[in-house]
Length: 260
View 1 (tube, helix red, strand yellow):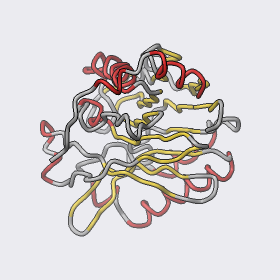
View 2 (view 1 turned 60 degrees about the horizontal axis):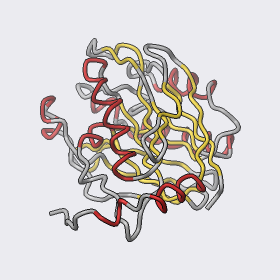
View 3 (view 1 turned 60 degrees about the vertical axis):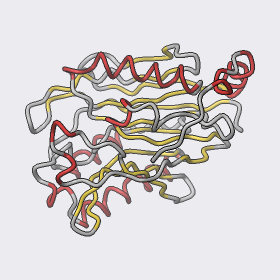
View 4 (view 1 turned 90 degrees about the vertical axis):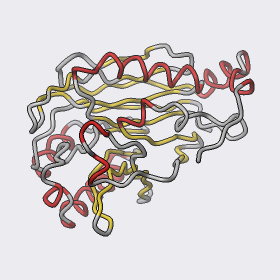
């Protein structure tokens, strides 16, 4: 397990259904000294649920994957962000994490946002995915999954070390965003990275950013400014993580449970 990891979040506006413009913008802001770089949910197209055939065009999805792999190789970092993909006649919101070695791991968003009718078009992910990053176990999740602690619950027998979460979280509910990110860090005794977009999307919904990097006791390492495009960076320490879990072995006292 690498002693320290440098984590970067690119908090940015997203050009609606314009992948090439978004690729150019994010490429310009890629740090070259980070171990992990996260981009917001649906970073290449925006959350364009009314234009799914456009957003999931095979050439677009291929280009998104190629972009992540290219930047991972160029920056020698793990680079992640989500995209809509079509599987048979249904859709999924898929978080891709590209490695410097050319591997592409992914997880599908588990929880459908019923208020917006997502379940009418999207299938829920069935698997929890943990990726090894320089010896760190990193759990992947997407936006609304943040609200469901059972799905993200850490297993003391095989714990993950960090939670990586990409989002388009609206400004109207941003208090839940900032609070739940810290809650997930506290209850799972893990580092948390949550990246959110800024700007107004194609549905006229404003997003304020406020991306966060959080320590294993719930302490805020850094938070993005409101309504500002910026790159946030913080360093995670494996020694700090181990010390917290050794001094306060809360994970061992939790209730056993299973997911149906």
